Amino acid sequence: MVPLLFAVAAIGSGAAAIAGEEERGTLELLLSQPVTRRRVATEKLAAMVAELGVLTVVLWLALWAGVRLTGMGVSSWEVLSASLTAGALGLTFGAVAFLVGAATGRKALAVGLAAAAAVASYLVNALAALVDELEPLQKMSPFYHYAIGDPLRQGVAPTHLVFLIAVAAVAAAVGVVLFDRRDLHAA
Image 1: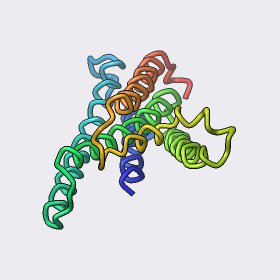
Image 2: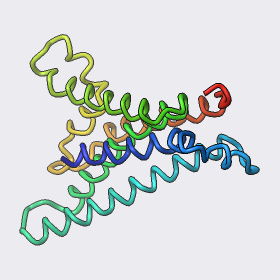
Image 3: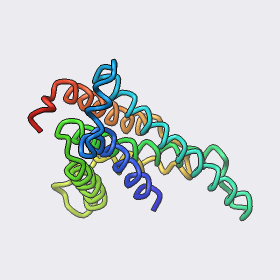
């Protein structure tokens, strides 16, 4: 449930960052101020990252408290690893939602495409063991990189965490560039 909750929160935040403002009619007022589009987009992304950071810390503290209260043999580092990986997975899909919303100005489209990407990623990862044709695609799935290292038992796998963050960074950067170049009057 944790990856699903993080993905939902991040997709909602990423889609609302630019597209939500545009659909509410508040983007024009924001851009009439002496700020660049890139700055607006970057600060919206920073807000999404901060939101996910808070969720990650809350998850870590809740899991840590649960582990301590129940006497489970899970270290604080393993709980933190699982929390960080879930946050990075959410960030990946939030950045995809941001990209689509920044490129199109349509919140529903951003939510829909990011959610579809999350579902497709999950299915590719889950079905790759059963369908040989999906096996080459599995390593491109963010869910593969979320689950492969089993962070709750073995700690964070740095290469998989870097993969998730890199995908999010590329999607975010492309979203910023597309928003900066998009003709807002045509929408």
